Length: 260
Image (cartoon, rainbow, N blue to C red; front, side):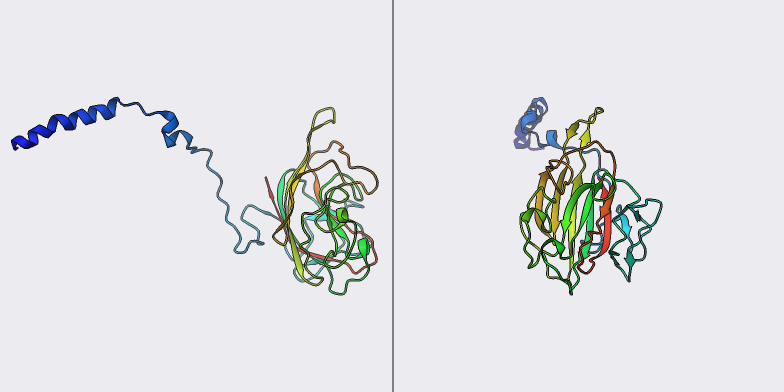
């Protein structure tokens, strides 16, 4: 070893000692903000955005309505008409709802206003999806479905509204005869033991990829007449509406839900 190398040895060891003695300031250490658990579960997405991911519950498989029943008589199956890959409201048979009850979820559903639609205002392709069915008939929290492509009505009753409660942020309707889709995030309300409201419901809604409701906090259940109000309930079915107007019936397909 040369004499020059020996000159560097003390300096090298002094640097090492300094590094060992130095305390790292947690405020300047990026590792202090790293979270490693719990590890999110793995979910395989569909090949296309509208296809059900691996952890979804499929509510309509294109062949039958086994996941649904009649609201008028829960002991009876849904009586709506199933065709090749879609189903259509059978006018006069009443609303249908899911056999399974849900609390918080992500919902995807597709629907189509008939190309030969008639009528105007609320009597033109009217239906709705109730994010929580809380009783017979139209009890629950309704997202409106109707032909709003070129059809004037009250704005808190057009497609994408929380019916009689919240105006949609945009009109993203396609023309009749084309399939349209909702993607919905639903957070159900929570109640105290005495029935009083602990936490209100909220909803985020996309129509055809366009945001229409952005984390909207609901004032209560849908009311056709009067102000919305809450009543205590737990997990609830998802309900589709047979509105009863005389226009041609609308159709649905590709319905799936992910529990949150």
